[in-house]
Length: 272
Image 1 (cartoon, rainbow, N blue to C red):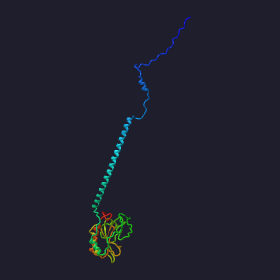
Image 2: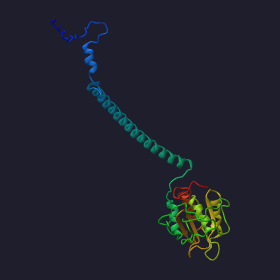
Image 3: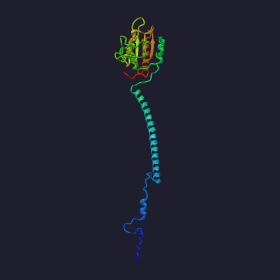
């Protein structure tokens, strides 16, 4: 009987790892690195964050220094501007007074006061406690003055012309007050009746008015009883009876004109 032949068992084949030095082989370390997950954090490294913080602090400090510098410069500019404005104001006021020859009111001479007292004249009075200028009525409107002659208050927009200096008819009081505001002196007199000013005194007053600027002479029918001669400036009044002589009337008029005409007593003394 023939023997059965045994089949050889299939032995498992031994697998060998590829050699690292074989051409095209990938090193294990490379495989390990490629297998690691990529770095996905968006936060910069600590050293970069520190540098960024230092740069930010420097920038903030620079801005603070710049703000402080600008604040100091602004305060200095304001001080300079105020100083310059003060100097300009002082110079402007001085130039205004010099250019327009606006001087402060003076005192009426002692001689004029003596002759006025001898003639029975009153004191120089300031009728209004306050006399602001620049209050204009409508042209032709009545002011309704309570003091006569009026020396201040609302007035016509148009003053009387400088010529003629001597008027033979009464002048409109609202216009005349505007002249007083411009630094005029007006010599009023009673023209009619037993208390009328004498012709000689009137002639002396006319001579004074025609020889200087900003002096007018005019009759005034509403002078108070006992008054024949009134000298006026802005908010100033000096009244006398008819007994005054031409010489004394001239002394009084000239002294009053010297004290008040074209001075800062009038709100608009520089105006024509």
